[in-house]
Image (tube, rainbow, N blue to C red; front, side, top):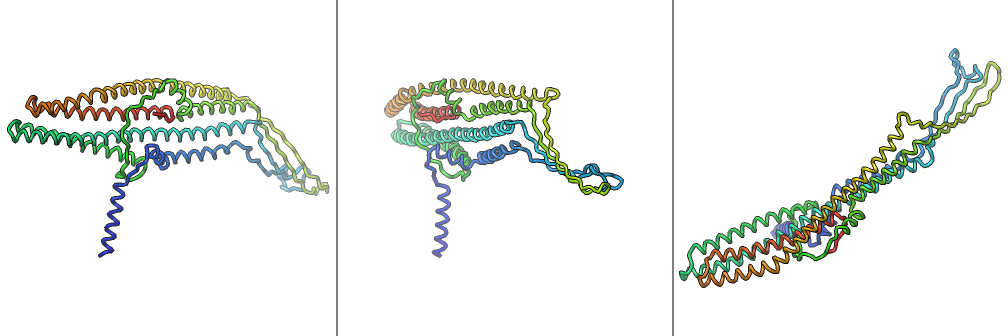
Length: 422
């Protein structure tokens, strides 16, 4: 019996640990864990290994060719000893590309490893940005839940006042019902917010490839920062650090190297061969003729019929221009994005100041005044409910704009590929 009880308690403890386990790490630690387990990154790592191995393919001297042949064999007897010129030829040849052409090919292929590395870095950058949006949205939903619960507590106090006034006949039953309806509405909002928070948490856990029920702790929401993000500075950071832009520049550099490799086709390749001919004893003359040794040197003639080589060179030049324009186009889009985000950040700063310094204190004063006036029957009960609801709306909006600020900064970090201090 004791054994069964012990097993039951251990199972219960294990299940509760699965459900209530918490990750108290920061967003950066969560992103690090997500990167370590991400299948796409692992597939790109495999692609990187393939690119490294590909460098050696076709960038070294080709294998020599050995061949065996029969020379001047008489067809009437098929005898090796009938004619003096009959022999067995052993051939060995080696093709030698023009000096520097193999190195040029290797340099082109080596660029692929750098490009794949930037692809990996860009995917990590994307993961960080997407997780940041989920993380800060989860932070916002949890804050709204806290505020809604505080609102319920406040409404319960209002309910007590309404009930006392109803008992002494200075308030109607409708007032009591109204506050209970409002409490129910706020509780319904809490449940909706819980569902949204659970969705955000599940998506974050999906990035970590773990059970969706694992709780992810979030810190308190901080006020909007006052750092200034200059567009020109952000553009310089993006050009220097963003993996996507660095990848475009690498593609352009690869096109430059490819042009040099193609231009080597204007120069000849060489072929060196050696032939050793074995001859047998000749019955007719009675002479044992000596063997023959021959050497051959060949040179390809790069005529480039139909402008083949020239067309390949021009293609690489157009490719360089394509990536150059793509880079400038990306920078233009970034300038627009930075301007839009900076405008949004400026708006959030102004609104936070207005909400926290002006509207929220006014709403609290309005609520206190409404409660005081209601208790002495100066105003209708609806005004009290409205005043309390205004406080909840302002606090919720304040939480939203503060998390929106962190999301905007996370977007700047994604677009620049840099960690920004804020």
